[in-house]
Length: 230
Image 1: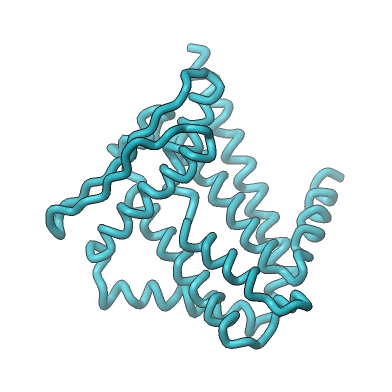
Image 2: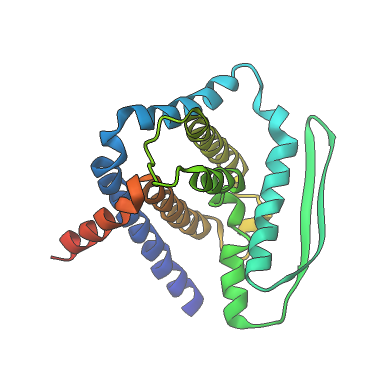
């Protein structure tokens, strides 16, 4: 009974926080990147290009990579939560079937069990390894003056890839987040979706603020929080 009550409370807790963060994403975006339409255009073209590619390359052609990055996300967050990964398996027997799993060990703990049931089990639905990698490369490639709106072709290409891989991640996450997916067994399907929505909003906020000129987005997000609390 208590578990059901707590599940109901946290379901709405994650959902409200997610909506709050999405408002923050809009506020930061509207005050920073939106003012640089050419800069945002490369991200938009990248995302649109992936959607267009689906008319040429059917989604099932991505199944190996969908599975690979799905299991990679489990693995990364298993490491981050102190687990020992024993096995990482990705295999596809045919174009119509797929298989992958990660085996890991960890010390028994109620608190860490709760954390891992959220962060590790649901990682593939909110974390995009490719997008994060592109963001890191983009940031380390910036000129010494940290001009986030530089016209360097390589930076524009990286912005394109950020948009491309983020939309790829969204498509893969939506296609894999099914009620029968075992990743949701430990927390429940609808509760799991509410947490995924929260984490997606959290990471999207990080992407927007990092892409904002000289991390100016964090200033606007703090301003947004201040206004909401008044």
